[in-house]
Length: 175
Figure 1: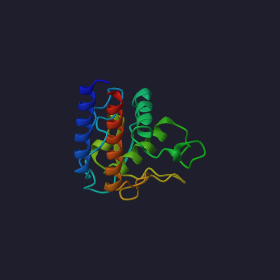
Figure 2: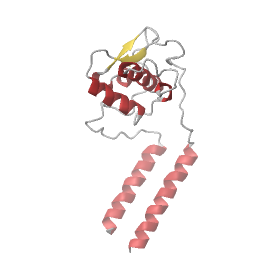
Figure 3: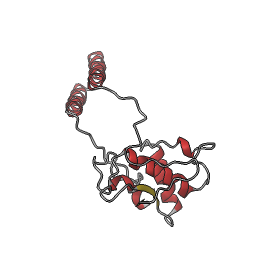
């Protein structure tokens, strides 16, 4: 690896650390195949003003678009899709619209109930009627907590410093 490449990489990582340390969010340009245009919707609820809302799949949209949006929500979107897996409380009815509706709503509730968190490339819409049925309960505002472990600012700082140390070791080895 050339010295100039390593130096540029180190500067980039330092800039990333400084941005993350200030609590700002880095946004990466989404691939055209991903149906949602923003990976980190803004905080705040722009549609909550007149009551609780849920995000569900739009009936009549392309099955391919709906499947791509569902795949994104359960993958990169990090929605909790366990309830729509076989044997889960929301598996039946086993339809694409039903499964996508659950995943879309889970993502929407975890991401601030903002309009942009219920887009999914035009395959979703907001509703005011609770879509829950039987044992399948759709979350509403305030009922969804992050399923990932919390990482403190101190732990984030340690992770960045370890990463920087590894890069420096790689740089010294290349000399």
